[in-house]
Length: 394
Ligand SMILES: NC(=O)c1ccc[n+]([C@@H]2O[C@H](COP(=O)([O-])OP(=O)(O)OC[C@H]3O[C@@H](n4cnc5c(N)ncnc54)[C@H](O)[C@@H]3O)[C@@H](O)[C@H]2O)c1
Ligand SMILES: N[C@H](CO)Cc1c[nH]c[nH+]1
Ligand SMILES: [Zn+2]
Image 1 (cartoon, rainbow, N blue to C red):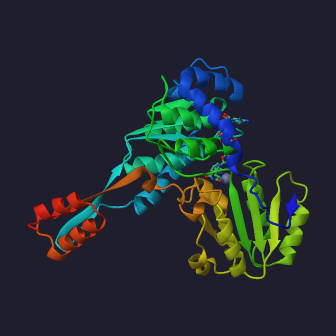
Image 2: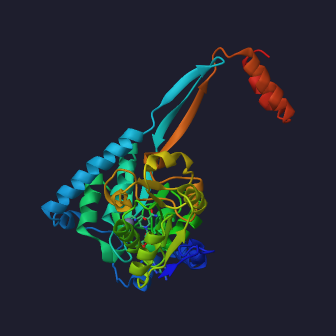
Image 3: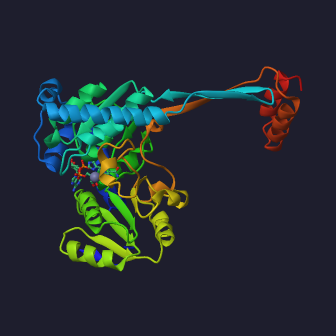
């Protein structure tokens, strides 16, 4: 289906799942493993005796040499990306203060690998590699029991995942956040998923770290009349493969493109929003407001517009298909949706690191000490002022 107007509410709004998910979280907190087994039976239609996958080695050995080679090759590319952008410990001196930052990995991380409609081994690569590059010691993963793909097991082994859980949806996120008899409580949970998964992450962020809201999928394409309409149609249908809750928009200056896209996609089940704009600049303004997960700049000389893109998870330039970012380019496919791109980006090595700052004042600048004392007194914190003054003879 085609709509010529942007919607007031997004089809992928996770907040509509909050009430259902609150109940699921409550059950997992109260009843631990028992709740997990009941919820898996009810929501994933799988009768399990344990939520821990204990056949990882056996399953991993089943993957074809072709798939193994593909995974190994992509693995290298993603390691290269995160090693390239990894922050380094830095320090300096100013006003007699030696200061700096050391980056420390988070200790325990849970990765959610979606698996309602399809298995997503690519997601385990996308989350696991930056975690490993950051130096996370304990990586755990969960995916719905019907989608324990041997490729997921192969990647889990390669990453050194401590345990793979047969758990989907909000119950997987709750188990990571609060722990159960079988599931390790972690410090941060990351990963994309449907509205139940994202609502659960949102709710547990009271108690553990999350990487943001990532799902269902969004794509905004900006196309001028040089874009190949067949490519645009493929890119729209590609992201529509993630389900009917996806949010897919085409903003174009070309009436020909609009006519052809409408003709081709009118009878698809997904809704595509196709809107005419008068310039690429106008389209970027609209895209910045939408703050989409994926942005495709399928226009002449796309790089010159990067400066005015302010909100987007990842940008595919020119004829680069957004789907290559989903698999192998280097940037992550775990990307913010629901306008979270206004204040955060996709998952990177930074998501698994914490900056610990330090200061050492052996011979500090007098004026700096005096300034601190003045400000502490102004705030009415006498002992703050005194504790500083006493050290530096004031
Ligand atoms: N933005 C991103 O970074 C990104 C990346 C990859 C995938 N995605 C998105 O991930 C999503 C994957 O969705 P999926 O559904 O295939 O898999 P999923 O693993 O996210 O969700 C499946 C789970 O949802 C739970 N569930 C289903 N119906 C429920 C209900 N009525 N009540 C409570 N729980 C319910 C079940 O427990 C099931 O295991 C897609 O929407 C896709 O667009 C987003
Ligand atoms: N397009 C998804 C992000 O929205 C990522 C993905 C994984 N596999 C295929 N696609
Ligand atoms: Zn995709």
